[in-house]
Amino acid sequence: MIANADFIQTMATTGNLALWTTIILLIIGLPIAYFLAYGDFKGKSAVEALICMPMVLPPTVLGFYILLAYSPQNSFGAMLEQYFDIRLAFSFTGVLIASVICSMPFMIQPLQNGLALLPSSYREASYTMGKSKTITFFKVLLPNIKGSIITAIAMTFAHCMGEFGIVLMVGGNMPGNTRVASIALYDEVQSLNYEAANQYALLMFVVSFIALTIIYSINKSRRI
Picture 1 (cartoon, rainbow, N blue to C red):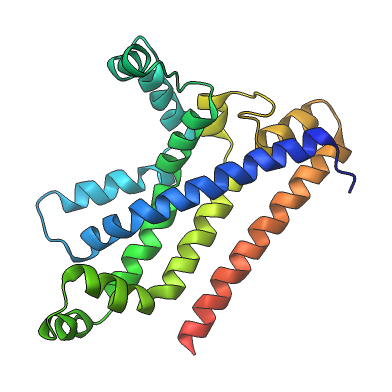
Picture 2: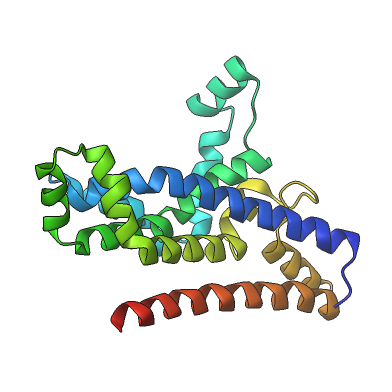
């Protein structure tokens, strides 16, 4: 495999997008997963369905609506441009926000399932000892769902590495800014440059394989 400057730049953008998406979702996903695992409120099913929508909704559909929201012709996009001089459409920041929304179920579902499967006695014992919900969450619950956390991180990162539709809709194909590996692969195939296409395809295959191997290894160890 011969890596040229364009390949390195594209993979750096792809890795950067996947890394930041995973970090952001881990930070916001943990409290959301806790809220969904232990909360009992009206409309909970609707909230869960909304979070999981990106798993069944075509990425181009979600990307289209996000692109509309970014447009200065709409209130959100107009507010960003008027008060903050920010345009999210066809920018890395805009793609990052879209990626966070699109990848949310891949982070939250494993975390929520891991928390929901923990015996309620863990929390009850902690509360009996006078520990707060925050201390219980960080000191008792999280250490007991390490496998779910690693699974969530691996699934989210792998999904981001291969994302195509939403990145193309929201960010276009701007080298060094929004051009990611999946889009570059498509371009190379269209240009009949199969050698370059193989570089992108092989690397994404390896990343996905490693992520799935980690997930299955964790699940196997938990069954033993």
